[in-house]
Image 1 (cartoon, rainbow, N blue to C red):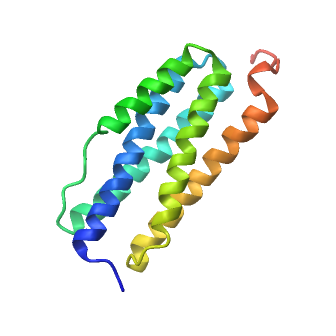
Image 2: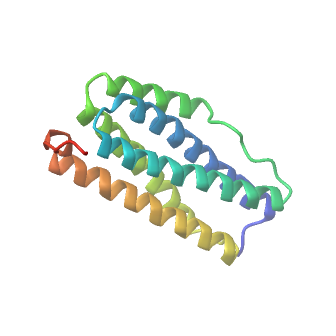
Length: 155
């Protein structure tokens, strides 16, 4: 049985809130990390979350709903936790980002099991693919301890 329009709007708005939360966490992580290659990757991932918000917000508006424009209390807490992790250096910041991405992966994975119309389900699938890529990169960065690698200065 497919979801009602009201349920679709609620589910999309919940994902939008999670992506807003992620944007806030990425802002804190980007501000606290000094290693340029890591910072650049996090900036790209933040851009993915910004795109998710725009795309899902367009769906909500098309269906007659009002998408959230900013994170809620949960987002403020995640942002604060990421900021606190940043005080402990790059490793702790990346661990906080791994936790954030695990939450987003779970949220998108759960939505893939729901009876959305095919176009919305495809958008959720694309966003989930981004989330999987983000989590894989963060896990690989932690495992490889990329912040400890010496890089030669760029000309």
